[in-house]
Image (cartoon, rainbow over the protein chains, first blue to last red):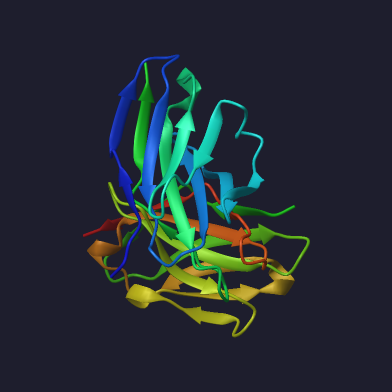
Length: 114
Length: 114
């Protein structure tokens, strides 16, 4: 069964460093998303991406964040200069965009900023 | 604006007992509603979804939920709990456009007592 994959599963970085979180969406999907979950809090929407551009972004998704689909398979989230408060679980999701547009989620990357 | 409220961050039930996880939603447009489950160290898995067809929705693993517009509720139930049901459950809402973001509740951790 096709699934969304994410790497790495856990990333530890120093404050101020750049990180890139990687996702491989399901191959025939057209819509891509990033969400995050700070420990003990709800899962929050960050950004949606379609046709090589951002469809929608939340207030969290400021200039420090960017997304890219560098090739036909990967979808990346870059944080340019990490802050302590960026520590969270980051989930990638994708959907075919047909019918209900059900989103399939990856297992997440736990980002720890020291 | 859309939101969901899950009542109870932790719920404990005995094995074989009824599972009831409560969710109320707020939406200015007809919503799609979802329940996701997250097992330890895994991603978010869709349990079931409401998409304006039948108000009683059946999902995987014996779970079901009923959409009640008058009560703005979408409670999740299972007649008989199993040890393997121990997990975190998230109620979520989205609009009906194909690329709409999903808005999650804070989650309810379900504990199954032997």
